[in-house]
Length: 344
Image (cartoon, rainbow, N blue to C red; front, side, top):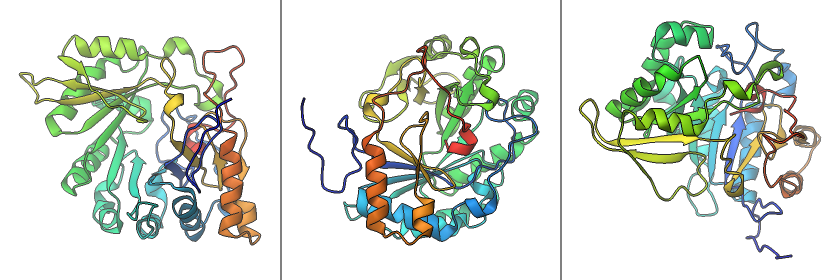
């Protein structure tokens, strides 16, 4: 057996991967009810006392950056814009310095609703980039998918993020069979025309009530087939640990050149290059989106644990990270928590 040597303080697993990217959930609450994410009447939200305070979030982020080598932080939810202290959390994280002596790269995954009203303060606090969910440009389809008629607000958020310089603005779209395949080409043209970077995502088994059906998922190969029928694509080299496989798009009559990505979490998992670790809004370490176990940092943090103690707990949890998820195998188990409760 080969011994993998990792830097002192690195958040390493037994398979030689080092986590440099933290997905930090700030809330499980959301102002949409997307069909693939939660039931129409919502979920039982975490009680407020169980959710990490702003100071606790900043402290745990500081442990990740200062002691464990994390260099990138993505704030997620639920919908992180619902977190009142979001600007202060971003400012606290921005004041940290990585092992390279730089501020961590700070990004936000959001549905974009209300972003236009807050983007200036978030950028001033240190936010560098946003990922905005947009599954359809058709108002009726968007309202059906999100169970809310909020498309104009999402588009306003996208434009505001671009105007504030939070580039590249990334757009996430989940493609579902019989629901929004018709949006693949219009979404691509829309993003190319505006310089946004679009990422199509295979629907994953992490939605409400364990209702995922593989037959309803549009696989990456079909998404690329749809794209190739309208655009000239060529593969982009240098994927690294990025979830998306990117394709360069040649200039066309209705759009400039650009790129489009496909995240094939189900049909072509990228687990071997995974560099992510996760913290839920209630302070639980999850080493994988599909983990069946969690490691509690909130209780020891509130019981007087030192930063070194918390780092040791986190390191021990990450050492047991799976080699990969088991979607597609008979023994696959969907986590009890849904995506909104885990953090995207």
